[in-house]
Each structure stands twice: as C-alpha cells, then as structure tokens.
Image (cartoon, rainbow, N blue to C red):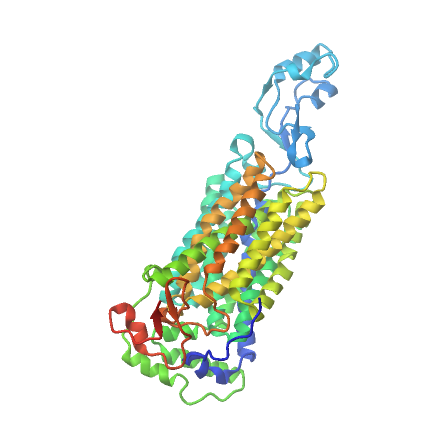
Length: 572
C-alpha cells in the first residue's frame, strides 16, 4: 500500500540548516555519480566465482598410450543418468571401467555391449586424473587443481571463504568507519581489494587462493557499505532515496552485467582475475573528489570541517552560504559530553534490540536467496555466460522498482511483499516438469527479480531506521549477520547433487517466512533520518515514540549515560 509522507513530520536541525544548498546541484551530482562509479568493481568481484570456479563437463582420463580399440576407448567410461539433464544417460564423471579388464577385452577382440555385458565389468576411480571439456573455459580453478568428485566439496567452500571475509569486513569496517570516518575506510579498502585481486592471480594452490579470497571479501563489503552510508548522509532526502535504492544498486548491476561479457572474452581464470584489477585502480583517484560525510563530522563535534565542506559545495553550486551554517549544532557541541558508540549499543535497549534481531534474520534470508540464485546461473540449462548476463539484467528493473516503492510506498509493505512474492516463485519452480526448462528458468529469474528488489529496499530501509551515531555500525552489522546466509548459500546449490528441487524448496520457504517477519518492523516512510538512539521509531510491543521535531534536546542523547531523559519517548 502506498501513502504520502506525513506533513506533520518536521525535518531535524541538520536538514533545515543545509537546505540552502538545494538537492541536485553540481556538488550533489558529483557525489552521487562518483560514489556510484566506485561500486562497479564490487559487481565484478562479488560474483566472479561463478566463472572462476565453474565446473566444466569432465570424465576420467584414459591414458593415450594404452593399446585400445576405438570401440573400447569410447566405451571405457560407464553411462549414468543425469537428473540435471532430465535423466539423460551421460558418461560418468567420477568412475571408469577397470582398465586392466578393458585392455584384456580389447586385446581379445571382444566387442563392448555385444560380447561383453558392461554392467558386469568392475569399475575404479579416476586414478589418472580427469579430462575436461574446453569448449567453454580454457581453465578454471576447478580444472587447475582437480576440485571434482571426492574434492568437489571444495567448490562451495571457495565461495564460502569469500563470504567469511565479507562477514569479517562487515564486523570490522562499520566500527572503523564510525570511529575514523566513512571516506578513509572506503578508499583504503578499495586499494586493499585491488591489491589482493592482483596477488590472487599468482596463487599456486587452492588454499592460497582461498586465503586471498577471504581478504578480497573483507575489502569488498567494507568499501561498499562505506560508500552507501557516505552517500546516504551527504545527499538530501529526495536524492538520497534514488541513491540508496536505485543508484548504488544499478551501478553494482552494471559491474555484474559486464562480468559475463568479460568472462566470455577471457576464458582463462588467471587472466580474468588480472583484468578485474583495472576498475579498482581507476577508482582510487576519486579520493580527491569525494568529501567526508558532514553528518559524521558533526557527530564527532568537528563542526568547522563540516562547514568547510558545505562552503565548498555552495561554491560549486554557485550559491551564497549563510555566515554560520550550523549555529544550533555548535551550541549543542559545546554543551554535550559525547561518548563513542559501538556494536553493543545495538542490543542495549529493548527497542533497538528487537529491531536489530528482526533485521538480522531478514538480511540473512535475503542473502541466502540472492547469492544462491546468482551462483546457480552456471548450472542452468544453456550458455552460462548468457544465463549470468540475464541474471544481472533482471536486476535493472528490480532496482528501478525498488526506487518507485521507496519513493511512494510504505517501506515495511514494500519489503514484505517482495520477499513473499520471491518465495512463492521459488516454491513454484520445483513443480515445473523437467522438460519445461525455459519455464523453470523464467520462474527462477522472476524469483531473482523479487529478491533483488527486496535486497535494495532493505539496505535503504535499514539506513533510515538507525540513527547517525550508529548508522554505519548498524548497517555493517546487518550485513555481517546476513553473511551467515551468504556463507551457506553455496552449499544450497551443492544440494542439487542430491535433489534438483531441494534448494528451491528451502529458499522459497525461508524467503516467504522472512516476508511475514518483516511486517513487525517499524515504518520509516516520511520520517527524517534519526540522529540519536532516542529518535528511532518503535518496535511493536516496545516503546512508542512520536516523530521528533526541531525541538529535540541534548538531554535525549545523554539518556544512555544515566542522565535524566527529556524526550518524546513514551512507553506503552
């Protein structure tokens, strides 16, 4: 259900005292597009494992020096039914007929399947290694280190190592960003991601590859969240909505969409990785064009630095700034005793604790569905490059819809409806007959569309719910909690080896339940961004608060320090 913003909600001091700058001048345009451009490398690195660790068709190697007739060489691999190909008979990937027996039959001139019953011939493993189909890839890490059959468990673990890094980065970067600033964390981690990707090119073992992949994951999420929060805090309310729902996400999708095009042109995994370092190198010079967050500077009491940014912005926008920009905030800064905030504050009070737990569960489910569907493109029927491109292309209308929803609709209902719809599509996929592969792919892409829309909404929704003093830590912690889902998402795809339908049943059920759970979250549509914990909206059953206005006082911020509370917060 859509609704108009409430006219009774007054903007806080910050919004009022920076309104002179306008919403879409040259300063805002530069910040908007440069921050969006910095996200493109994340679209490459985040899902590069789809091609780096894809498993091409393979079979046991039969040494060329063996004296076998053509008939026996062609029949040395037993046939097995492949569920992913509608039960068609395909050469076994992990076993062959025992070569001693095969050589004996060949030397005696017996014909396979006619004079020799192949079902009675003993089998053995791929003792001489594997031969891989090179019609799609020249090499992947799977072919490089033979991560198949008994070693196939290492394939999903490779992706999980990346997401373990993302988990660690979510935990560390949010607190570092709230402590040292959004800008410095963003650019340090962009540099770290670029250097680590270059080092990964020279990996000599799967273990070394995974160790570096962990570092890439850490840097990947750190610069993404920092850029997201930086834009959310610099831009005005209307542009902020576009940036947080469509802007950042669309540019991530651009990187994601370019990935299969690049992989199509570069079929060797080492050369592909080397090419992925270029976007990061191009982003580093943006340091001189993107400012620090004025909101963060003000939260640290650095009013003069924040004013300097706005004076430069006013000059760029050709606007005359007032003599004193943050007059009321300067008074607050002198009288207020500030304390550092950390992750523990997300659980300190009952209200913020239940909001955080609910968001963590929703984020966790979303990442399972999003990354499992994204990583599954290589397993779909048809060309893997086209399937990945299609999966990325679906994200463009999804992010556009998320912006429309965020602009005019209830945040809570937008998130709930997209989650519920995505879950239903995924549950329907497993009901489609095996021969209707294109119908199943269409439904899977529709599920990906809904899940992607929900992912864009929950990022911006979370940033709106939490206050400035905790925003980067809170969004980073939500991302951290969700990484449990992303870590296990590759193993959801691994379940295909037991049942093609099982991943869809699990993902569909979890996503549908998350849609229902999200209805418990407070509404933030039409509300100003909260600056302190006491300004947050209430969770059902906790404390009810009325929208805050320009009259909120410093004492509200001091509530957590045991001082008297003079706020607009009233308990049920």
